[in-house]
Length: 453
Image (cartoon, rainbow, N blue to C red; front, side, top):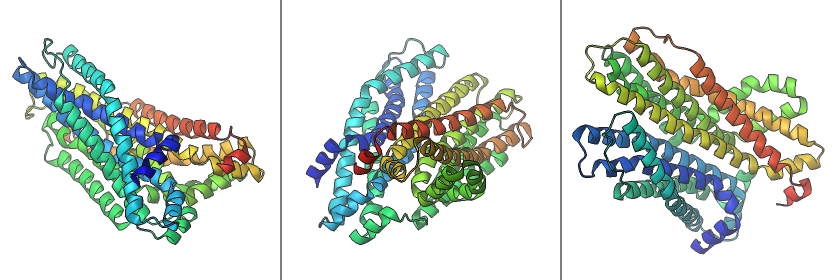
């Protein structure tokens, strides 16, 4: 099965692009921030600079690790689900569940090693730029020498392998627990119910987010910028919980938008609604990064905006000179996580749409024109964008409202709506552009050839 994994990678390289990109970007992010630990351990580093570097590596790198784990697992699950027919065929010719699982894990391990090694040069450059930014903002001493060594390499490569193999294990378990006949049926009839484990995990993440919001509004009331310790975590945990509930959320939004889409889109609108309902699990996988991008970016940017306009708090344990460093840290957090999530939006949607080349070919053979196919995909993108923006916005509330209450005494922050409109515009544009761009490329292939692929 390991030899089969190698051959599968060789002949289906395009099918592993989405997984490779998520691993590559994840390794780059983790290694770049882990390099701050190597730099902090160098000779002549003063205590204040060391504290800043370690904080940057552990806080930002830690949250990056959470998002990377989630993104890799999501991408691997989507990849394995798209190959359900191939895996079912292997079972039907005698492959055991253990052999199929070993093939999936073997493929993932090879891709993860390649992604981690290729990420080293980019991560080294990213770490250097991060140190330059910290020095330019006077948060670390200007004379420090940059180091990219054992901590960055071991943490980055180790995390990438563990996250990738963990995601492969989760995806392989679902693919291998079905019998051959059940697996062949699952290719055409998608499971609509969420598993018990996924439901429990979603509830745990939601509860963690709510708990952080409550602590922010109560324990840290009047404590100033100290409230960021829990407020920043709230939107991340809650957004992950909502993303795990993706299949349920997709069905809710589709039920609301079904009427308008059918009325405005005609046949294309009808097909878009039916496709989303029939492919709930696939759509939910593409929904996850949109929710994470919207929730994390909105929560963190509004939290910092509230802090910038709030009066100083006498009971804060953080010295005034450290406030600028915390603001930089927050901007780096939202920048790093938002860029990663945005790339994952494009990556996931392109992979999910390109996979449908055969479906688009079949529709064209029975009479659909390319413009009709594009309208159908565009309407599906509208459902995705609406669901992602809506529930990502809900995810940000557990950060924005509690932090505003703790810092200003008001539930609704007195800040500009421009930040939110910008985030929503970016999320919607990325979603629609990714779906339509991938669909346009997919329908360039002649319909007969697409069906035969």
